[in-house]
Image (cartoon, rainbow, N blue to C red):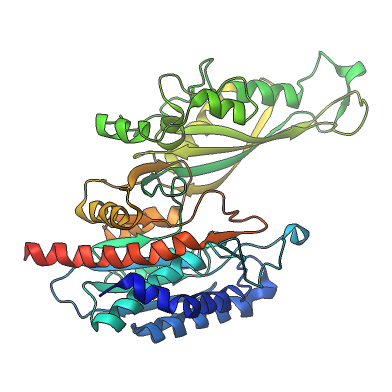
Length: 459
């Protein structure tokens, strides 16, 4: 049978269905769209039912609903858990959209709408891949479960709580996620590492009020001076983090990992020029790709205080602020990292200044072994459809739920993205290239068959 012919024949129906789902403004961050979020969950549950999934359930939570479905009729074969999210980002600024964000439109081979690539469009591929196999063959080569949330865009806690409470229900041999992108057009990738995260806000205070710099300058502590000195102490002159114990748990890169990372490291001089820089900067001894995917960081995201209006105001500010985030790798513990940074800051604060710290987000890094058979089969499936085998990458960003799935279910996570980096996710004119819509369907069908055949050959 030809799945290419099947999907070509169903393409108009599939795109019309996806447009219908994309037209629902399921913006999880805005309370006025709560009914729309619920409507998107209901649409998804109905679509899973129509596709042939069973035990389709909408689980109510303290936040937005979680949709579950399964098809477990392949005894002795692996079970794959498909994760995705049906909530979307706000659309502001609205005037920068060429067409309305919830009126899906196809232009130049791209489907434009909020959620087109992040993540309704990519999740939709899994539904239709399963539906196609059931229609054409009457049975799936593997067992399938779907677990789809409505709080990904607001970092909600409902899914993590649901996972912890339903470990047996969600048990799987692998978790499959399509919420990422290819390296570039025609070059698929599978992410095997995501950095963790921790954040904090720092406030330095001195006197009870701002002071006149003529009357008090040079004789009292200055909150801005104290903060700048404190922040400068966090790194050495070469860019390494100077916090004692910060690198504990950071793994050494293997030769295989170095080779994988080198395979897609950009021309660093060209990249610097494209960014308007004279040169790149970072921890010595590592390439750009190693620094951004496999090494930890401590970054200043905002520093502010004192007079910032037009002209001059000769004051000594009584307080100054900084926002700091760390990207973490390997076994770095977010809580211990925050504690180490706080100890460092307390030890380096200037006399006469007081330190106030408010911790924020915490998420562990995710990593899985690219040699795992279920990841290798995914790379094979990409090669069958795209003509080039997926490379294994490490992403510098953080997706906390990926680590949560891996840890709670003790299963590898196979990140099979079909978006492209320039598809404006979270921005106006978000879109999904229909070339990858078509190839994504075929790749997922190929993957399900390869996983099933691999299990059959071992039995």
